Length: 167
Image 1 (cartoon, rainbow, N blue to C red):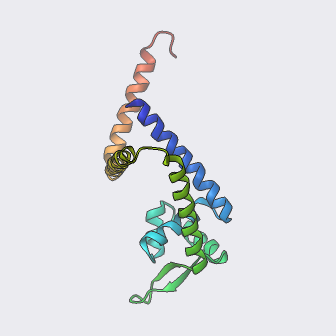
Image 2 (image 1 turned 180 degrees about the horizontal axis):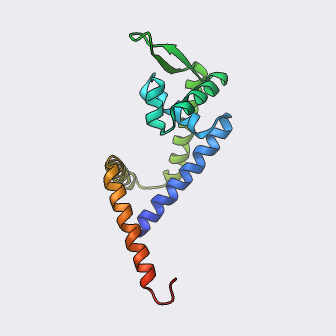
Image 3 (image 1 turned 45 degrees about the vertical axis):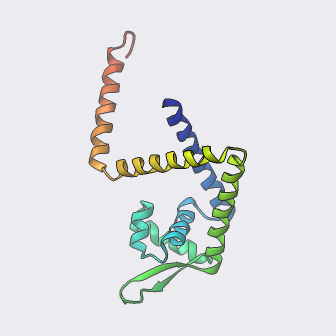
């Protein structure tokens, strides 16, 4: 299991590097690319939803949207039912760009597993879904994360002080 966790961490690190490279190739930052992905998958969103989904400050989303509009990838439009609100939408160029990014990602994943047995790919897909579900469940428990992390750090710190020659 430890090896699986190490390999999953390696995939996450590689994915972060991949996202940075793709965003850079598009001429935007990682948060801008993530916003494009959210808009593709969720549809038009108010800026406040992007704040929550991207985990950035309200002031940061305004600057992010300014950059996306300047690049011609997204635009702010009046909300159809709430005159005080706006929705962020993809422009045709933004839609084409994020579609292309996801298509390239799909091609790269396919190239990595194309020689694998279909049965193994199906099993692996099920395992990945279970891992994603477990990680989402943990992420939804912010107080539980804090308590568990605090306990483990305390235990590791205590163990380090007890070892001969430590400190």
